Image (cartoon, rainbow, N blue to C red; front, side, top):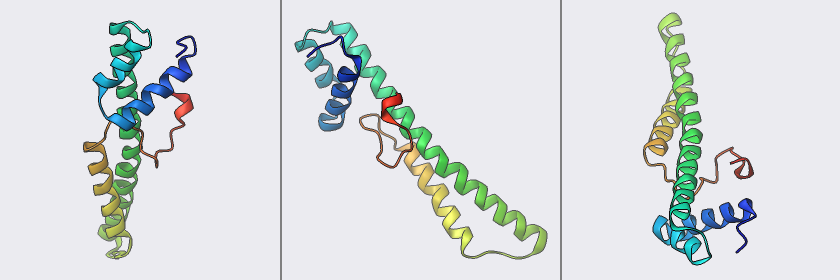
Length: 121
């Protein structure tokens, strides 16, 4: 493996993390291919943290979107007395789903529904 191409190295580490779900294994593969032990561990940890951050940022959209729509619907209800029965459950579900995704986010792979471009990381 050529370590002069950082894009190839990062892609390899992401693939290893997604397939094996083991940071030590991914660092071990990099070490066997000629990378220093400490550098390999740092690179794998950095990519793991980037993946975790990306997944949590994607779930924050659900949390804020669902919470905002819920607040608007409840605000309309309290000011006018009209309750939109269709919007309230969907916005509540979006809020809860985003909260669950945020709390259970994994750093091993980037969720496929996130809007983040993997090439920009």
